[in-house]
Image (cartoon, rainbow, N blue to C red; front, side, top):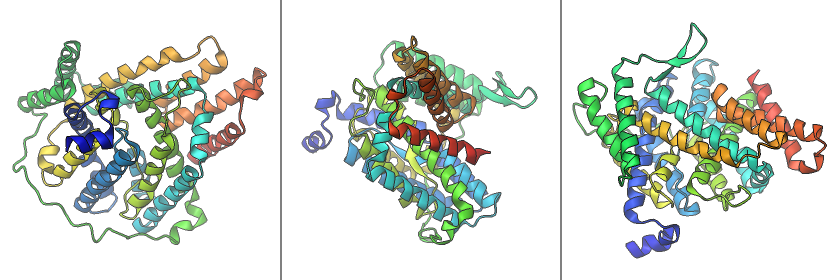
Length: 434
C-alpha cells in the first residue's frame, strides 16, 4: 500500500508522509464540517428534504474531492459554495422558481464553466492577472477566512444599529471558548507540536462541553437517507428561459473568481506558485471544479467549488492529493456518524480559521508598493473582499481599477486582450447586482 501511495501521490517528492497527510486531511475535514449543518439547513428552508440533501452533499463531496486528488494531486477539497447555496435557496423561496428549474440553471452555469475551462480560456485569464493582484487575492482570502472564523464563533457580529461590524457578546460561552481555543492554538503552534491544529480543535471541543457550547448527541449513529427522489429532478429546457440569465451569471461569475482566488491563495500557502505567481497545472483544477458543478446539479446541489478551508490542511502540513483523500474518508464516515461530526462547535473551528487568515497575509510583502498602478488595485482587491464580504467582489472591483490606472499611466502595452474581456465580465457581474 505504501508503495502505491508513494507512486500515486509522490509523497517523498513533496517532503511529506502518510501520517502528515492523514492529520492534514482530518484538519481539513474538521474545518469544513460546518457544511454538514449549514448547507442542508439552507436548502431545507427552501423546501428541499434536508436528510436527502445531507446524503447527496456528502456523496458529492467524496466523488468530486477524490477526482481532484487523483487528477491534480493537490490538497483541494470541494463542497457546495455557501454563496451559491444562498442564491439557489433565494431563487426557490423568494423568487418562486421551481427546484427543477433552479437545478437546471446550476447545470448550465456549470456547462459555461466547462467550456471556458476546456477551451483553455480560464488559464489564459489567470495568466493575465498581474502578480500583485494574485498576491492580493491570497491576502484578501486570508482576511476573509479570519473574518469568517470570527463571525462563526460570535466574536465579531453585525451591529444593525451602527450598521457595521463589532465585537459580539464577549461574555457569551461561545466567545469565551473560542478565545481559550485561540490561546491554546497559539501555545501549541509556538511549541511546534505535531498535529497541533487538530489537537487544538479537539481540546477546544472538549472544553466547550461544560460551557454548553459542545452539545453531546443522544446517539452517535444514524442511517443515511436515500437520494433516488432527488437525482435528475432537473428541468434542462425550462432553465434556458431568458429570464433566468441573471441568475446564471450570478452563479457562474462568483464561482469563477472564487475558485480562481481559492486555488491561487491556497496554492501560494502550499508553495506551489512559480516566480510569476502562477500555479502549474491550474487548468486541471479548473476542469474538475467545472465538471463538479454540472454533475452536482443533477442532484439539485448548488455549485460544487474548491473550498477555502483546504488551507487548514495545507497549514497542517498537507502537500498532496492524499490529504483530501483522507478528508473524503472522514466525510464518508460522517454519513453514519453525523451526530458525532456535528458536535464540533464553531467556537473550536473559529480560532483555526483566524490563525490561518493571519498567516496568509504574508503574501502582501510581495506586492510592488512603489508602483501605484500595482499597489492600489491590490489594496482594492483586499479591502473589498472584506468590505463587500465576498471574494468575487474584491477581484471584480480590482480588475477594472487596474485597467483604468494602467491606461492613465500610459502603460496600455501591459494590458493583454484577455484583460479587456475580463473588465467587461466584471462590469457585467456588477450589473447583475444592481
